Length: 302
Image 1 (cartoon, one colour):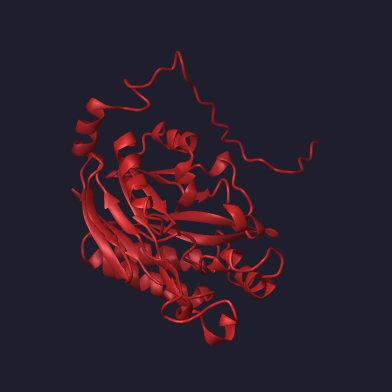
Image 2 (image 1 turned 120 degrees about the horizontal axis):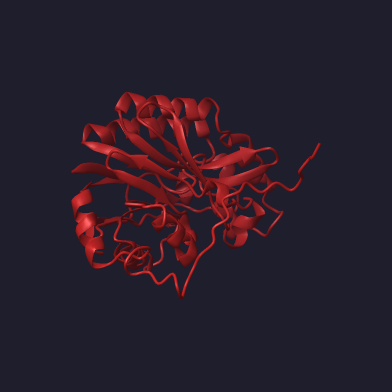
């Protein structure tokens, strides 16, 4: 049995240094309670760009310019600090970041190992709606899974979990623990997590932040953010077992850490009944091709 933790926390709005301090402290807290895998929400560093739903495209430079200034490079000083926290805690860590690569930001799920190394990086394949004015699209080269002593870990970000072919690509890589960091507060999100758990016969760790208008620094609040009753995200964190039953949560309206235990024997038992990429597949009828090559807009050939 292995302990896992879903960290439902408030991001430090557009302040990556302070947000990293908070993340490191939460890693320490979660592992003190027995967690060997600690999972944070979507875009926790430096925060989810909620303003894309409140302002017209290209009229949000007050926020987006600061997001770029506070974005995380991989590798870099922030990943070094997160790696040291993972190493001190002896745990795997998965955390959502806005990653800056060249002139483009990506919505990235970053994985760190107990030795402090960056061992995985998934860039969101398709930003949703207004997110496309902030984040670029990832490609198949970052459809990563991470092999650990307690099973294979991987995940998709927010509405990627509504992409059945993306889920299938993870199942085909032998995923045992499916991470679902999100900003989604919809009432059907938790049933979605339960469906994924039952479909893939995987543990699902859904992690959502909490953030209100009053949590935005006054200097950045402007006219678009209100007070305590202006919820950007109420949280919705939930941990689900491979039989689709909820093990912890949902947690809403407050910060907190959900804990659960995972067991590979339970997964094996469930997959004896249903394996979506094994004995319950029909490759003679259906097939999926996944291109895992990195895609570059410019290629130089000697």
